[in-house]
Every structure is written in C-alpha cells, then in structure tokens.
Amino acid sequence: MSNRQDIVEVPLAQAYRLMGFGPVIMVSTTDGSTPDASTVAWARPCAKEPPTFSLNVGTGHRTYKNLAKTGMLCINVPTREFVDTVMYCGRVSGNDVDKVREREIEIRYGNVLRDLPLLDDCVAWLECRVVPWTIERGTSMIRAEAVAASCVEGVLTEQYAWNVARFQTLHHLGGSQFMVSGDVLDMG
Ligand SMILES: Cc1cc2nc3c(=O)[nH]c(=O)nc-3n(C[C@H](O)[C@H](O)[C@H](O)COP(=O)(O)O)c2cc1C
Image (cartoon, rainbow, N blue to C red; front, side, top):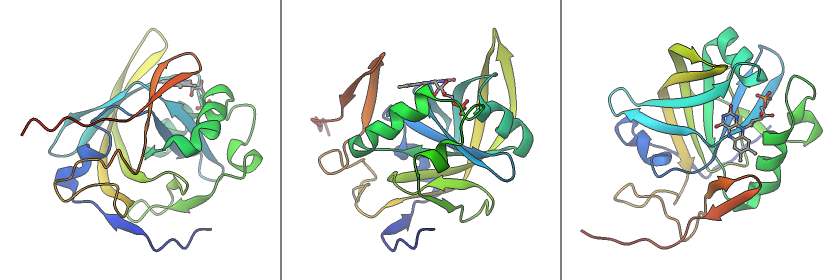
C-alpha cells in the first residue's frame, strides 16, 4: 500500500488536461475483490463539464466485465518508465491471470471512489463513474465521468499543460511501437 506524499488534486474543470493530448492510458478496475489493469490507446476526452471521457474496450476483456459490474474505472496515465508493465497489461488478460499480483503492481485506492484501485506507479489519475454505453461489433464505447482527478506534483504546469520534459508519456504507433512525448510548440 502506498503512502505517497507527492500527489496533488487537479480541479475537475482541468481534468481533461491529464489525457487530452493523447497518451496511452491504463485502465484499472475491480470485480469487487481482485484489481485488474489493462492498456488502452483508444481513449479521449469528450466533454469538459462534467469531465467525460470515451474509451473503446473489448467486451471480452476483464476490464469490460469489471466495469459492467461495479460501474467505475480509473484512467491512469503512465510514463515511459512504466512501458514494460504497459505492454504486459496489454498482452495478458485478467480473465487468465491476476496481473496486479503477478507483476507486483502497486495499488492505492481512490480519494472519492474508495473501492477503486489506482495504479500507484502512474503519474496521473482520473477516478471515473461509467455512464450508459454502446456496443458495436464486439467493442464497447464506454463513457466515463471523472469525479476526482489527481497527479504527481509537477506533472501539470501553472497553465495546466502537461510537463512533457519531465514526464514523458507513451503514444501508440501500433504493434509494439510507441512514440515518446517530446517537443512543445507554444503558439500563444
Ligand atoms: C499499446 C496497446 C494499446 C491497446 N489499446 C486497447 C484499446 O484501446 N482498447 C482495447 O479494448 N484493448 C486495447 N489493447 C488490448 C488490451 O489491453 C488487452 O486485450 C488486455 O489483455 C485486456 O486486459 P483485460 O482482459 O485484463 O481487460 C491494447 C493493447 C496494447 C498493447
């Protein structure tokens, strides 16, 4: 169990800043007793107020079963240091393996959603309740509303922009390839 002191709350109005720039995310869920973590590249913000996100999750995945059961998920944003776990959680299913136990992934629980597992080695977290979703051809379009947002101190600048120099995120190119976040052009 974590006792990190370096985590700050993010105002919900700015929650979209934690993943609006397209990083690969990890979705953590629970069936009520066993936590699961899965990699998701197809995810994006879709409303600012309330902060809402849409994610495509295969209906055969453990993640889908868990969120259908509990109505909640956490969007965790990893950095490049976590890439091995990102790949592992994207290749192995919680239907077959307790990934969190197998990989010794550090978990802590939500500030608002107290039973929701968060992945402690990521650097930003959106605790979400899922709202009614649609299924098309085996893939669900999940809508998730954030009820709490937090990140490691320094992840967001004073202007609420992601600090890509210090916290390099992963951007999926396909297969086993990722681009790592880099240059920022400020056109202001
Ligand atoms: C880089 C990467 C991105 C992925 N993106 C998605 C995605 O957007 N949606 C999805 O349903 N599965 C995606 N997957 C596949 C799931 O992470 C994978 O099927 C996983 O085993 C599901 O785990 P679960 O059964 O424990 O939920 C991705 C895998 C990788 C490696």
